[in-house]
Image 1: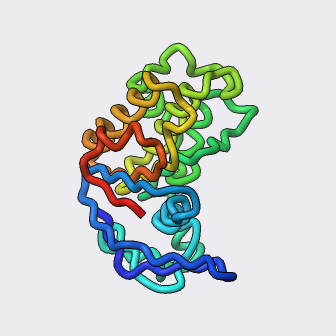
Image 2: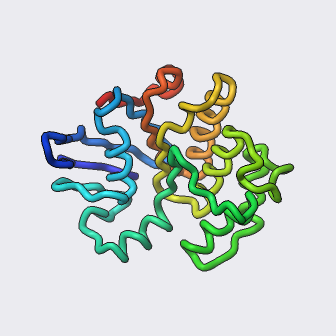
Length: 208
């Protein structure tokens, strides 16, 4: 479960954001929409602990991540927050399976190879395990990012514009996969996007 209260963030020079309060339970999906410059990506980075608010609370389960030290926040993020960013940031020299396994090793010290294979197969990537990320289509890379984000069964899954570069068929496939997997793993899913195609897919929405 995630809840926020009175989040305020400023880049200075007049760029000031005060975000609406959010509450999302396990297995529930929330779509956050808004035009360019409204703070969608900033909010996602705050929820993921990549940036810190000037004030306010960001509570995941029973932990206010805004109060954690950098070291504790890194540890907490690795175990509890999955990120699907606009850029995938794969390790180019590792294959698809190795990139997903690396995420489990960094967070837990374990190589969850079998679990990674199951996730990738579930995302229809069974035949691509040993390919390099550069050999995949954009849609396939997006699915690898989803597998990597879910490998540690996070409490919160954050997706930043996960469908904006995809055609209609792949956009709806990725949206369905995210929603289905969030329910399967009991993960709260938050998607930030300007993609109008998703507005009919996710009834629970906030517009910035």
